[in-house]
Length: 463
Length: 82
Image (cartoon, rainbow over the protein chains, first blue to last red):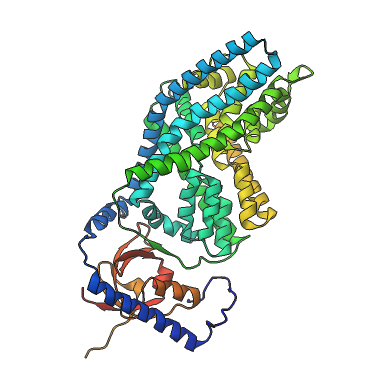
């Protein structure tokens, strides 16, 4: 019963843990430290703050009856605020940035720039950048401060407390709930955070499954597609409540897959029982507004946006080339997406979507911009100045159904992690093997899930 | 004097108190529990269980710490009054 599951560590020179005298001595030292500390504390520390408030709040937030509903509700509210709040600034940004594009075009025309140069710089690099900024920035600037607020209040450890039993049954470490919440920001950061798990076995499980929580690079995609999905179901007029509910559902699917894959891994490749775990539930604190704004905007939003922009420009360049270099009577994009199309259709996507995911390997943020650009290059050029225009492009011009939107969301949620995350995994595990597995496992799952959903829906005559 | 009852911390009823008697844990696990302040004589209150039944939150020296059943099984306590 008291067998330690921890891997044997090199024995210390001074304290041999098998030696009962050494144990006695260690115990005596800790005992004395605590007694002395208590003695001093009782003399100099006066307790004024009552812990009643935290306890009462915990009575609700971790109660058997309300704990889970409140958790889901909070998540839903965060996404609802993000979705409704991001709509307007997104449109303003898009309007401004595409007005700027017109000015750039006029300038290029006046200067007599050759068509290919104009295409690469304005239609390729600038337009991708503009899309990344107008689609990504508003939801990020709203979501991150809200998430940091929950973090700052001390709510995250309560989530870990509520969910821990599931992780224990999956054979993983309780801290995995915390590394997963880091993953909501960025999976590469989530993978680095797995350092807090001591046992190598459980650390690997946490690393390999971190990708199943959608990072912020995928949130805008999920948010956009969930409104699109609701749009296809309710004939254009979606409401933001159901869209927020859809995003929450995606997160729940991600958590479920995390638990299942963790459980499978701890039964097969990474066998073992969970090691010891303690979790502190700190008292709730009033949030520090300044800190929240600085930390969420500078540390997270700016960091992620910079990374997206750095990746977006060269990818926009490559995508433009692929869309405009003709081989035979088709562009490179046409050839590649045509080749991928039969397979992609079998899993409920289309060739262009699958290609966008592959081209988006450097960063998930650019999947939607690539998709838009590829569709635009294949169809009629239209003025893309609002999110409604994206919906029209996807649904009316390229035949997206509810199934397409759903499966694109599922694929985005479950597919391979971005290049940065894979590289981080290789570095953190000191092995290419785990990085390869971190690519293969999610991708296989994404394909299987999307295939089953697509075939199931078709069998039932939907989509 | 009546016989002293010793039970594992995991069996301490919610909203009741106990005093640490000894630790059954070994090695790292023992070290971790002691670092939390679970040394003989420390008073512990069982506060609440997770909605899923495990872990349980304990009040230990002013901090609220959640322990899984496996850990709390390795701490022996003597039930006390408040």
